[in-house]
Length: 346
Ligand code: ATP
Ligand code: MG
Ligand code: FE
Image (cartoon, rainbow, N blue to C red; front, side, top):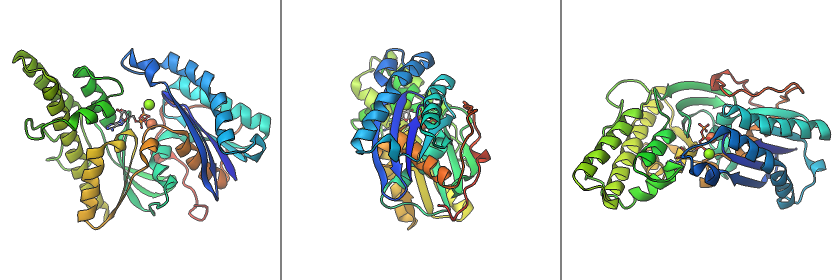
């Protein structure tokens, strides 16, 4: 079977074709980053309009890349939530219309399930059960995963998401949007022991996280440097380095705790922040030391993409799930409420 995946939850239009035996055939991505950069964040109304313009040309392009026809497609997967309502509706309406016209089943996929399963698109795939650290622009979660649709939330952020903290830090330092890649680029030039930022919540029991304190710490450090006429590029880089180290340390400590608590030794790290080099290194070192396994998506599938939606949708369609014509999007959607898929299908 061949699944067409359509991702439009935020500011990237992602389209992909996933084949149940041959794997990922082709994928295309259009990022609206430039459009939103001048506003310093995503403008929902502009996002929806741009999705409407891009979805069909990208579907055409992806079909061509895979040298396939619409008649080869056996099912359609689209992102039903969580995300921006208008952006979600643009994708869902196109997906549902194509499915109706081509007489195919369509299934609405949970965006975070897409992120969580993204490492399954690689050659070596994690076996269940595992611990997943899901760190993105809107979420920071530690999840016990016992199968597709079997998710138990062990830890969450009490305030900002990890990616949001990167984005806000970049903004405070006058760096571009989105902030994650900018901050980590600067951090490479930073001196690691000039500043030591706090490691939020690590001295408290449990798996919850908090990143808003780090943001305040960054701001105060930057304002002080300005007062002392030391707001240089080097200082900026040193702050980025200290911030990144603090986030990476915190995530490593929480992952270790989750693995110990659940008696597991397999870790999956996904979502946009899993593209971060320092975080990848620290979590790889942790799992080396524990003689466990760690899995990441390839870099381009850490952030939003159509491939992860095509993959998750393909599994759900194979299990016989599909939506009726009366589709609805869910800007908020609890990951724990998803329907588990029978192991025999996976
Ligand atoms: P969600 O998936 O929670 O709905 P989203 O789709 O906006 O949110 P993603 O596309 O998964 O989030 O990831 C985008 C986030 O990842 C941004 O906050 C961005 O700054 C961050 N990010 C991307 N690359 C890096 C990096 N190298 N280091 C740190 N953060 C990064
Ligand atoms: Mg994005
Ligand atoms: Fe995302």
